[in-house]
Image (cartoon, rainbow, N blue to C red; front, side):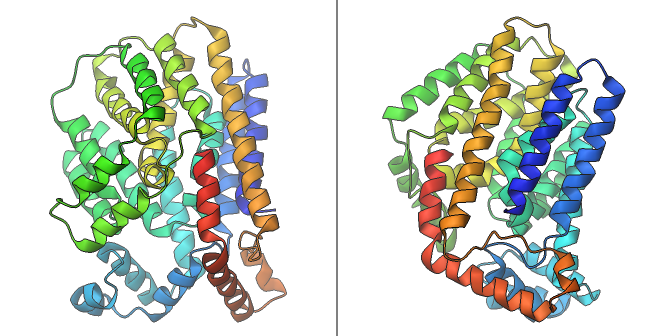
Amino acid sequence: MPLMLVTMGLAGVFALAEMCLYQYDRLKKDLSCLLFFLIVFIVGIKYYYGPDIHFYVPLYESIGSVSEVWKNGRTLYPDTEIGYLILCSFFKGLGLSYWGFTLFICLLYFYAIFRLFGKLKSHRSLALFALTVFESSLMYFEFRQCIAVSVFILGVVAFFDKKYIWYALLMILSVFCHKSAIFAVAIGFVSLILPTIKYSRYYFLCLVIMIVLGIFISVGDLLVAMSDILPVSGRTIFSIKHHLEIENSTQIVLGFYLILFISLFQYSTLPDKAHRKFFILSVAFLFCIAIFYKYWFFLNRLRSFFSPLLIVFVINTIYEKQIRITFIRQGLGIALFLLAFALGRGIYLSNKLGESKVLDPTTIFDRLHRSEKDIRDKNIAKSHLYFRKEYLINKLNNNKKL
């Protein structure tokens, strides 16, 4: 079974237990702590794992010193962000193996999640379950973006802690680790720095209308045309077009988004001054969902930066406010479990029916009976096979779901 299904299923069980034990606050807190450490452990023990290692492993093994990377990194690795290259060089210089480096990325991400989810006052197991549903690929495979997302989240936390210099430095570092952070940082800057807009719960109904209209109206052609006039490199233009090349209006997640917007409309009340920035930041991302929800590949990049923030916002909004329509709140929870089932089923079938078996679990404990070279070479071969024969098919299938 793919490791991402293990964490998703485990988190789902804990989330159900949390709902059943709603009167036992201390027990729920203990269970959420246990779940957090179990997820960190399972993600951390992955070993030469995932479809992207054919790129990441040779880069890490061949990279030079920090000074060499700083001088020649843009020439030697033109498609890789300089921040990620420097991190690879630094940790390799410390003598860390490739697994040690991926463990560092895992711990960095979950440290950021720990800091952010500390702002949750209830349903932390449910929050972790939602995170495994939406961000399993980030946890297990997307190392460059995972670093950028971790730094971005820590930057947002620093902003709310009124550490504005740290916020600015972390946002700059995030951009240097992955190009997709440019969009996230821009949205965050507009939402956090510029004057706040007046709160209205009817924004959520507008989002429902927008997402319904989006079924019939495509903005892809307009975005592609606009990308041609942007003052950025040709590689960036190519990347933007690549992420917008596939669209699908009838995705499984469409119903979840609609229930989410309706739930927020029912449960939102005027936030106090301390939470107004957080509200605007979350609504800005929900606006992006309403516009780009059928461009899975593009939204997948942007979503990873904001989904942990959105999870905190939604749970605090729905579960801390006075209940108005209970079945809508319950409907959102049921929709999350149904979405998890649909996504999990797709992951299981794609790996079972695929030739590469790239998601078959490989952990550090496999070293007890296999050599590092054997595991490395076999998994890199799987990764190459996956990209030759399965990548585009899986991207199309994921697009139909998300």
